[in-house]
Length: 95
Image (cartoon, rainbow, N blue to C red; front, side, top):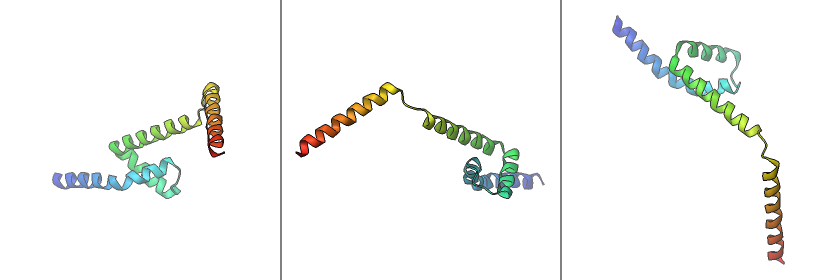
């Protein structure tokens, strides 16, 4: 019956495809409690999916942290100045 166990393992890999999208929803807190439990149980039993979960979570945290950072004031001043210059050029060109 070892072939049956092997087939079961291979079938489990195919099932992992179904979990990829659900892993993203889990990270985003978009699953109900029952689905969370199912996905979390799968993650405890499946190393490759757990690695994908960890990677997705790390990327989302990095993006969130990057989006929360403010540009330095010197950069903001330069951008404001350039925007004013563009507005002046547009208004002078339109006259």
